[in-house]
Length: 432
Image 1 (cartoon, rainbow, N blue to C red):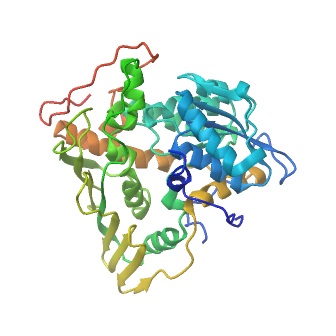
Image 2: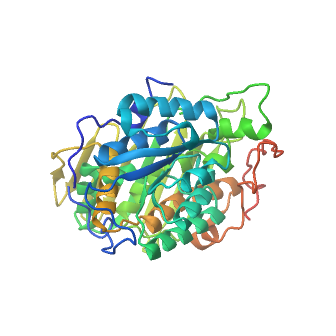
């Protein structure tokens, strides 16, 4: 694993001024070789960035720090002001390694296609999640290595597109890495590795939380914006773009639940939630509670909330037949109690940087990384929880995976007529 560069910064911190060993089978790489290999630092790797917001620009920054012979070669965003802000920040941080002349700065809903076709080797996908399946499918079809931000989709049809793209990446021997950053965090790798090795015995209960305040303003608006522009600008407020906060943000906690369960999928989910405080605009709920049932009888309980002025809680509690495990993300605490008393006291790391260090090392060495199946299943945990809460129904894994509800508009243009969908009402909203 390459050493972490001294200037590595978190993605969320990166744009503030401008607006371990791998765990067992969970992280084992497939030892196959890409059709196009890159000699260790003798070939320049060209990176294309799709989505120049905080996450995208931060990920591009990490990519440039991961390998000394990487350049940012092309960028895309739906909006020119977002593109300029992100690109200027990257230039200020990385100087002449940002080699993006005006003719490789692409703006618009189809700008991702132009980045993919610009001659890049690696594509970073960081537009709002509703676009992710379409962008991933195009990047893999074009033979590009991909870093794909989480979540991977917002509905069942999108999930199926992502799984097909991941399988295609495997066949083409392309690397596909996800933005589920906690899986690159040394303390959590060690902690969940011990859980998977039996430190708490057989897991029978997991309780996860992601209770915080809103991460986006309620509304940004200008008179000349079309309804489509308004919704894409305010993407967090719409299910078809964000999947709601349970899918866009709290999916991190659900991914850790999946990790602790060895990436087994649940049999069914039963959810609740509502829209109590954030009612001024949009149609997203502000809190969810979901119970997941596994085939062996284990239960996973998840709660998340995005409401200002409330207590924050971001943790995973695992209970087994021989002990318990607590991972407190806010307190940076990783503890196992019971028969195998243990507390993590080893080194930490910049997990955002590590995920790119490992991706680019894999591209250089020809050792394929493909997170496709588990990253998609973790996303589906959040989607099926949302569907269950919306409808008031118990939803099985098979129903969720085969759902025909396609919430992302096809052939979207800025002139597409979009209305604000009604708020979901349990018992009235139908499962499709």
